[in-house]
Each structure stands twice: as structure tokens, then as C-alpha cells.
Length: 183
Image (cartoon, rainbow, N blue to C red; front, top):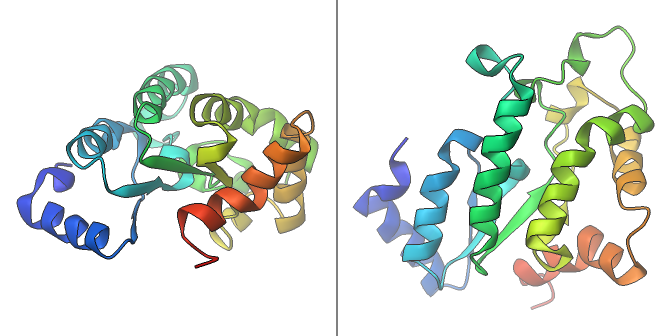
């Protein structure tokens, strides 16, 4: 906690900005307010929030999915107000998200994954738009909860109603643009 407020850390982030590089932030939902403050203080810095802001579902957050979701959704809305932030949509297969798929003998299929993850994915897509959302795999870490194919098939189920342009953005073009991969 507090790392994003440290002057030395901010000087380092400014160096990324000077070089037209992206600051990737991997943090938990309890830290998202700090990222919103950073985005406000550094509006010229391109920021990518990894793994949808890490909604925690273990430890003191186990069994509190609705409360965590409400807090997470609030901060994701706050972050989405900053045009310099994009979000990677994925990482929900990590054990610390608390879906407990990793504890089962048989891992879930794409239908079950889509049902569990849909509220998070759709909240982010609605808040940030496909122009600032990029689907991601977090393999091999997500592999404790699902297969690689089932992860991507779950994403396909969630985005089934999206337009062809929205899908192109979510699956490819947002990442290419935000990271200047065509430069």
C-alpha cells in the first residue's frame, strides 16, 4: 500500500511517460483508489491495469463476493473516468480470486467460466468500452482453474453479442494500439 504515492516511484513512472512506454499496474481491488489518484496526477501516462484490478476472494475476503464486487465495481468506475487507463480483462482463474475452481477434481468448462466471470468482464467492458479493454490469458497461472481453450471459449461466450468491431478491439486492436505494437 502507498507505493504509487512514493516520489521515487512516480519519478520512475514519469520516465516511462517520457519514453512513450506504458505503466502496467498489477494490484488488488483494495489498492485501486491509489491507481485512480495516480491517473489523475499523471494524465499523460498510459496506464494498463492488469487482471481486472484483482478482486480478492480468499483470506478475509472469502465468502464476501458481493461486498468485494461492489467495492471493485465502484473503483473500476472511478478508474474508467481516466482516459489514460486501459484494462486487461482476465486473470480471474487465479486462486486468489476465490472462485475455487482449482480445488475441484474436474476443472470447469467454458460455459461455467463464462457464467462466473461475466459480471466482471461485462462491468469492465461497459465502463471502459472496447477501446480501452483487452482480453488476456494469464497462463500458466490461470491454469490452476481452467484449460487455455476453455478460458478463451469463455471469453467468446461472454462477447458473443458484441459487434465484429468490438470483438476486434477486445481481442486484438486495443492491445496493439495501447502498446504501440504496430510502431
